[in-house]
Image 1 (tube, rainbow over the protein chains, first blue to last red):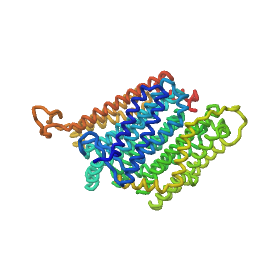
Image 2 (cartoon, each protein chain N blue to C red; image 1 turned 90 degrees about the vertical axis):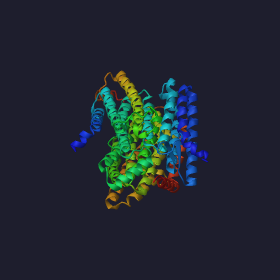
Image 3 (cartoon, chains in turn purple, yellow; image 1 turned 45 degrees about the vertical axis):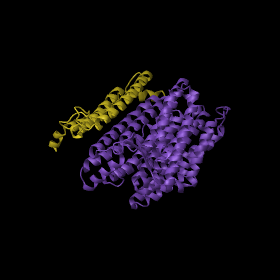
Image 4 (cartoon, each protein chain N blue to C red; image 1 turned 120 degrees about the vertical axis):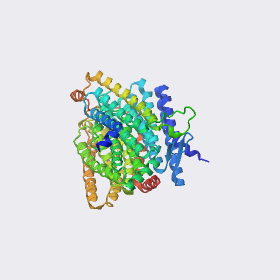
Length: 498
Length: 126
């Protein structure tokens, strides 16, 4: 007899899909409320699955339809899948609640319910990517994620959004093409689409040395496709325009969780399809490591040169994505734990920066230029404090999530010989310095009193933003004070993957 | 090497199409050409899948004349993957066409370089 909890992964995806359809026909206000309820419901589902899998110490599979493996389409839930789904649904909920007032301003009234439809589709795709055990289903939801993320970007008709969306889509489609070809080659060489069956095939081929070239090409295609979609350097060029011009909820969702969805699928493929330590995968990981290091440095340099707040935060995202790939490249349990921890920490920090940044911008004549932002934290005290917490976490001040991220990376690097050690630790040091330079500079700027250039800006209370910022800050402080339980959950999840 | 290429000519052509589409999508500056490139790229993948699933001298996977022996039929999975893939690429094409229409309405050109330049001049990047 299957426990009821085992239905929840499937229900999470279906509830989001159902809500997407219903939101499309509800009036704007009702669809916002309905979407918030659905997001909370899926969050509760994900937490329940997390508690169940962590409590029993096992994973479970869920067959779609009544066929057994290898013919069925399966979902699979272990600790790590449930943890990813929890983080994704939490950040989706908080970003939606926090940016709701901007959605009302930025988007035409008759399209506001469609925005909720798109957010629900993003939710469905992210939960499906977390739980799916089938590569082709992964591809389909990857495309649903791409299309709905393009939608939440382009729905605001202002500035450069359409151009940004076009550039975003072109790079994403290149990534999808490579990924799909990789999936087809996996199917061609092993005859399966379910992850553990492909893994058996790959392990046999790796042991016998047969089809070494096709296997390398396949793994390269899949890794490159997902890395392009996630925005790894040098494929991050869409980020500043995209994150800079979308409505704050969209920026928060895009930077916080959508790129993480692709990375989580990549980690899953490494563990459950290609095998982390097969020769081809090791080579692919080393290449990702190099681009990760370059991304960290270049992202930070560009962020420092930027003269607009939203573009600075966007470039910093490119650097933070680099960190995750460095963790993946270092490999071993410590490397992947560091990558997953960074994935969670960044998913909680970046939306906070985007949402509080939007509030500061609003109090500065809607200008994100640093010169106009001077003194913004005095005009919007709450947003200033929230931004400061996010910025300090990015720099890596102890007791906040960013510090534990850097600690994890240092711990992972020392296990990998002198060369990796020097490169990783050196990059960490340089990046921390650059982060400190541009984030602390921004914090000082927003707290420097300015001549009352904008006059008295009337403060309207934004309860949604307050709740959402409180949630994000609680998450960041929790990760900063109690990294132990989280890292042990991640390592248990990784061992269930294997 | 050449023998393999000739023997697997369908796969070779599929990968050639994929490469043509990929390069067009990446390097052409015109939105419509990019879109056509994307469709060529996807068609290449579908041809690859279709040729992967086809086995010479076997029937389409629909039970006919009471023959239930699976060795008489080709593998149905690649065909269903192709169908799913076509649905995905049609949706993506529709969205990209909508984007192209919006870009044209706003900038009166479909050349991405020109659009970028226009957008920079209007200081839209703030």
